[in-house]
Image 1 (cartoon, rainbow, N blue to C red):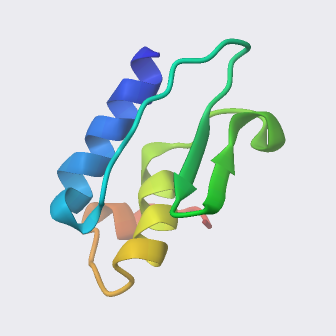
Image 2 (image 1 turned 180 degrees about the vertical axis):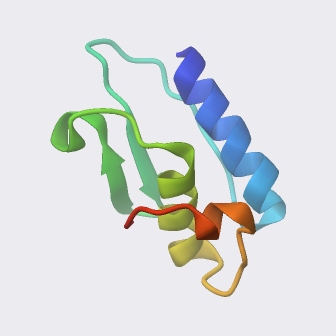
Image 3 (image 1 turned 45 degrees about the vertical axis):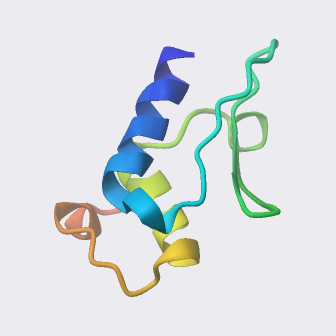
Length: 80
């Protein structure tokens, strides 16, 4: 839950009003999923873990604000 809250805060800080909402839904069994609209963009079980913050920001940016520069996050290696 703490990591999910931290990642949600990172998304809110980066994208602000470009996001309609960021919702945390309690669950059991280690579920961690990120949806942008109806699209599942990250599933912890499928991808074998949590995303690194820069990776998650790029994935979300590419869907909600493709022209948005992410500063140092864009310069960090890794594919989305």
